[in-house]
Length: 123
Ligand code: SF4
Image (cartoon, rainbow, N blue to C red; front, side, top):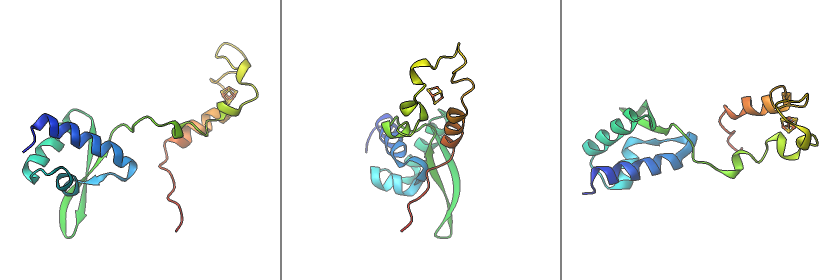
């Protein structure tokens, strides 16, 4: 049986990689080879540390939890559509001038859009 800290690290790493989809607690423990009792303890510990979020979910007629990361891993694709990257005013943009990220509508709209989960591709 893996040590609890190892299990916490592995569980956190796994949950981080599930992104917005999250993972059912039972699937995670199966994947890590832990018992459900040990797994529940680790999930509660990670939640108490503020690293994951647990949401109750009915699965096959039984209540369980789906685990989500509180923070997503850094990824270059998260900024690939940032308007600043292709902006013709980029060189002149400065918080102390008229052209400023403080008042930029394009940047504000992009930031607001970051809060929404990505749309699933149509099949
Ligand atoms: S904040 Fe606005 S004006 Fe400044 S570089 Fe980004 S998109 Fe351009």
